Image (tube, rainbow, N blue to C red; front, top):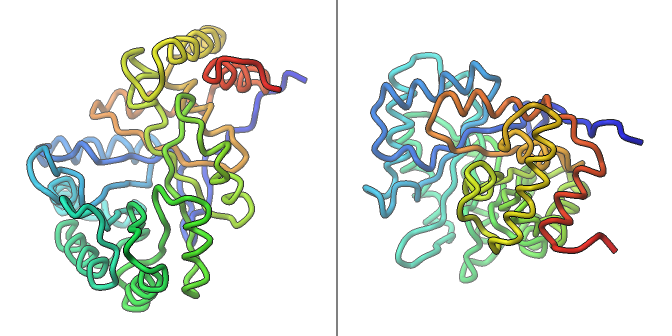
Length: 304
């Protein structure tokens, strides 16, 4: 069969129905208010309503928390915009410690994020990375307390292993609704480490960060893979793009979206035109053979 793989445009994350391409604001530090607002409004007009940020974004560029501050400025500058988006932020990374997910630290992080974002509640809060020195029971207690207080509406994890996610969930009655792994045609680890299988088993929504391999699947430069494997993947992506009459980025995003766990792909471009172009992913006719050809190119061998 050569039928195209289905690419649903929306999915549920806990109580929210969201578009399956989300907009990441990790590069918002230093962005003028008007430019930040333009990017958000462009995203919404294109059908991108999940907006992702984190307390740490801005560290090493200007200041810890500045990406949240600039996003908060943009939301304040456009009354009514906040109600149109599903706002995601993360906490628990505190350089140079580097991680602190103790109960008091997570609560303090959320309260600081609320101030920077100028909002009364975070729609979805994720523990950014696992803190090996924080007991799962303490992390769970923090998430439950913040949810009960109305500071967060839903909770999830980011960069957690399957074992870490399974260990955290029984420590609280509040269900985890999302997991955020790095996932792209250059970083296919979630296919093998169980993260996407757990998502299908439990209903967790995967939120794929760096779905374009740090931009390498659009530019052909750099990326989290050896150059020969990257170039082999790009050759397959270019072939598929030629058949579909679209750009590389649309094919690379379609490859992530095609997985049956229904990932949300988080893009981070700062160019409004590229935000709009990302939606071309849903028009890509990606066959089952196409999808596996891309994976085989990354692995350097045929599937067993």
